[in-house]
Image (cartoon, rainbow, N blue to C red; front, side, top):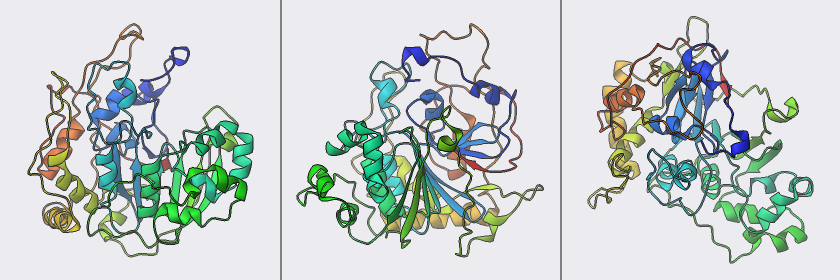
Length: 401
């Protein structure tokens, strides 16, 4: 975990992992920059971190009843954005930080998503999103934010592109340790063109690079043939840091029920009248189409193999072909429900087991193996023999975290 030495103390997640505690409601999470990145890496495609706590992966889309939920883990650093996932244990001073940096290969997958998305999660804010809210008050109360914005360094530029492409009804973020709301209006054109049409003061326009007509955003090319969502408004909410005033870091929302028709399979309920979590049919197709191009470092040599020269470009047609496979082999057979297959595969915490200067070994996760087997694709994370542990239980509520 990348965290200053003064903050190195054991929290309470190990109790949820071992079964001592249990999340009272279904909790859907993404990763940030102060997580146990080794554990999240084992669940690159997503999975149960503990019973009732589901991780969306480096990037992911799932279904909860009528709601389609997407997420992007990590924070943005342009120096690492176009690199492959080259970090493996043991981490050095550089890789323990770069391991949680957003990668273009994961953003590209989310840029391949079509149709409506209802909820999207990111850790750092999409760049320029503050300009759709009371940015003057924000900059006044947080001068470092204004200084970063003047250098075009506030927020996650790839997340802004995803905001423009996915156009979810709701977008939630954290990271900045302040509560902030904005209503993003999608007016067409590129996202930086939309920003330039905003009604902001001439003082701000003169200081922020995005308002310079010569400004060009370094964005990733969208997947050929995949159109943007037609939703016109996104409600953005950022929350503060746990431990501050609860009004800043905790918010209860009642989400509007999507009006579109859905596959009835997603709407099945548990015995407690809650929805099940389901894989998203299109996301499975995108994951399957992208797997051959996924680059990881060899866990023994830490060398990333060169890209395959003949890997075909992923297009809407490529994804459609894989989606046909998913429908015939998974959807038709009732296999889209996310299994309750959590297994505690690493040792439980015990006093003195691991020191603060030591690093754990890499534990391949059985959930990742099962996911690859489900999609009949190569599991690029399989390096060691699996451990065993206790099973998870049924979900009984929902919380976005």
